[in-house]
Structures are given as C-alpha cells and as structure tokens.
Image (cartoon, rainbow, N blue to C red; front, side):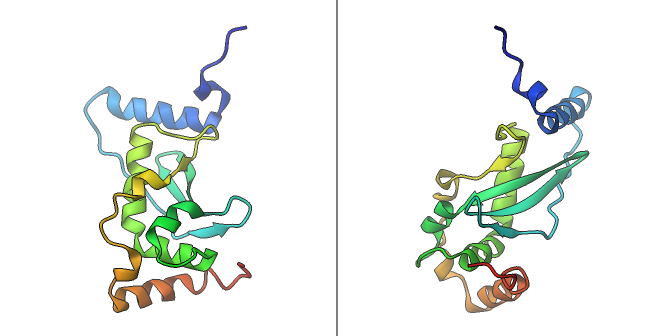
Length: 149
C-alpha cells in the first residue's frame, strides 16, 4: 500500500511547504515571521506555547517543561517557565524561525523546541540582571493569573 507524503496528510504543513517553495522559486525573497504576544502555558502538554505566522501559515511553537529544567536553577513551575520564555524570547523565536526554514515541523504542522537546542545557552536565567527579570515578571503577570498551577 503506497503511503502519501506527510504534507498531503496535513493541510497546514502543505500550506507552509508550498509558501516556502514559492518564496524560494525565483529570487530569494525575505521571509517575514510574526510572533504574536500570546505566550501561554498548556497544562495538557506541560509546555509553553506561542504563536508564529509567516504568510498564510500560522502555527504553534511548543517548548516543553523539560527544556526549562536546564535553564532554571529551581523546579520549573508553569509560572517560572512562562517567565523564562519572556526572558529568552528572542532566542526561542530565532530557534522557531530556523526550524521552520529547515521544514522541521511536527506531524501536525507545528514546531517543537527540544532541550538539545537550548542546552547551548551560555547564560542561565538566574544570572539575568534583576531589572530585566522584573520586566519579564511584569510581562508574565497577566498570563499566569488565570489559574495556572
């Protein structure tokens, strides 16, 4: 029984692959990624999730709790994971961009950032300046006040 290519089974993935192929078909056009301000904790998946958009594609980037175990000095609670995401947001977004450019998507057409990528981090989050840390906590306060445990 012949199997269908993965992009034919997942319409979201097909749109992304087609969009990337069209962008690379002629002259190399720049890819403009958008990351909405929507970081949240997904209790079911035990991961921080945030959105990513490029052209017609919109997906979810997931960062599991185990990634934050390497970055945080203490036990990674949901609140601390979201706080850590905000402190390292640029790094997580650039990893997501790289994975999308390389078409390293999950079966459902989304992106998952695993621990090996973030292990290269040179600066642990507990070494971040207190001012930067307090700004990240302020950014997270609304996100974590909705009953996350």
